Image 1: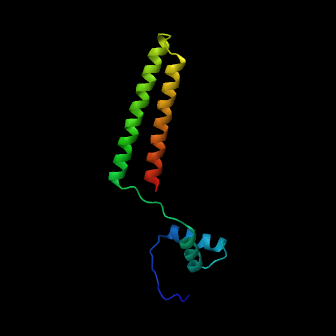
Image 2: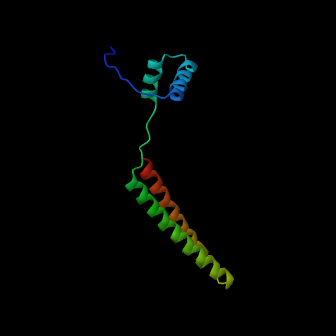
Image 3: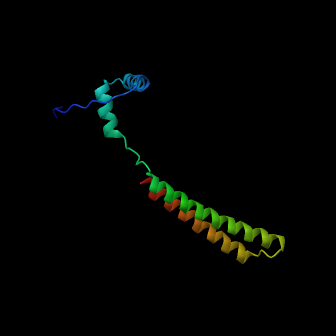
Length: 110
């Protein structure tokens, strides 16, 4: 395929040297290296401030829930009232919280 389009970018000295070194290490010209990088890499989506604030709020809510669970566990443990039923229920709640955190993480990463 003919290469008819030209792109110009600005780099500082360090960025330019890093690019040259990486291209040299790959035995490619700068153009070939950049074309290869374009084909074989993905760009991570930047998190904007709204997404970041929403993520921080959701993580804070999960943290509050975990603190409440720890508080209940400590009180029950001090009173020797923690039984297997309570333990299994709390374990289930923690699994749900973990699932919520993973959903948040993967939703924000995509």
